[in-house]
Image 1 (cartoon, rainbow, N blue to C red):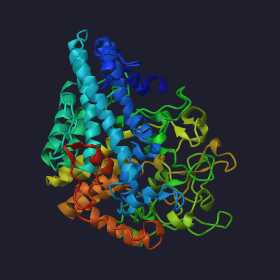
Image 2: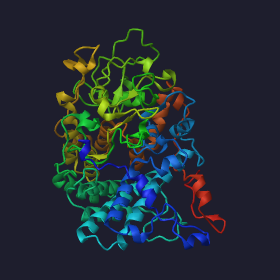
Image 3: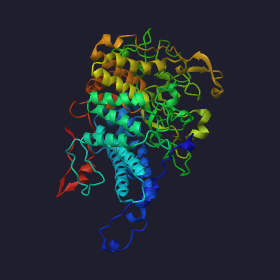
Length: 593
């Protein structure tokens, strides 16, 4: 229930408590109007408020986005642009001329002047600034117990680790600023992975198993993030050790033993969130009293079907390549190597008034909880009508994204209509347990433990195979909220891998199966591009995607991933220009930009 959440509404509080400085001598004689000095807020109340403000920056919608002058979507914590669109699992959507900066990100022709990168950079450093302010003030406060001091430092360092993790995977070489820094013109000439490790390790060692508020980080969220950090560093033995602990001992902040929920869709429904699969989530809430949707998943506000009950705006359309990936064979297994040779039947080029019969061949049911497609129930909003819900089908294809969509039956509670586009109370889950299992499977496979790797993969596939994860037709198409029949909406067939299957493939092909499972399970959750880069497969996979998809849809035609350049996004030029000492920038641009 939302009333038990840690409501992340404290950005304004942090702003009012910010320490201020001025070059004018007059201001040295008087307190800044609207500012509070350290001696007033260096206590438990002040430190806790700063910590809540550090959580508030998770949504990217405060100083990082709005004050930076960027659209709220530019710093969306889901990374739908940088992880999913750039990862070839989604088109920008809308029409070709809308938000053209995303087009260049999708096709890898962006340069350092693209303002989206600066918005994201500022949003993440805003979070780091808040974490550092919390830690600095914590050191000055004298009325805080040892237990609370340990917890507060653990939470602040967990959050700082998250913000730096995001910067590292996006831009690679970034300057490290912490609570001891006095010179903020730091160079970006050091690998910060060890410092990120240290923050997550401290948080793991010092945070409690459970917390009083579900939105706070706990020991096991920190452990999962530490394991994920090791995966990015290719430290597979260290990652395995951590994931073993998380899998065997881990619990959610609200005390639930980690596990997979039976219903896949429950990970994307505000009424069933903060469940046993939620390792760490950004808490979203509708109608927070501000008259805005800044705490209601504002970063996704563009990503609803066009000309639909959601009003706006037709962005974030799943690719043909992604949808085809859900094709299965008669044994319920995926086509790992040639899924695009088994394409789904679509209504591309067919008007909504014309007849259409959906694809009749087997598919993984996760397809229809991920991708909105013609004549398949779109949650409880009715059958997806096809072209009439697509803003420009000939540009970005026939599909709509689905995981972030709220249900019609609970829209009064979990949607927020305070803006020109919808908001929702659906949490942004940064790490869920299925992600942990698949990272653990990957680590095991890298270490040659293919039987254990298959066990973890099969846990994910077995959940997908449960009957409750099929999509069923409506009892009454005129009133979808009346419920569903027991008639499957498509030909669903998915199964775990048979005993010894991954071992029979050998290590390299087993890894390919694990990578593919991440594509299916975590589709449109912002992971894909970053996974491809850390696997060293970005050029191969993305250029193959551009060849296939670009021959059908023009928005990605001509896309090209360049090895040695596009693994990371460019350092924003404005940051290079601003960060100077004696006329020379302390920031170096990433290679080949």
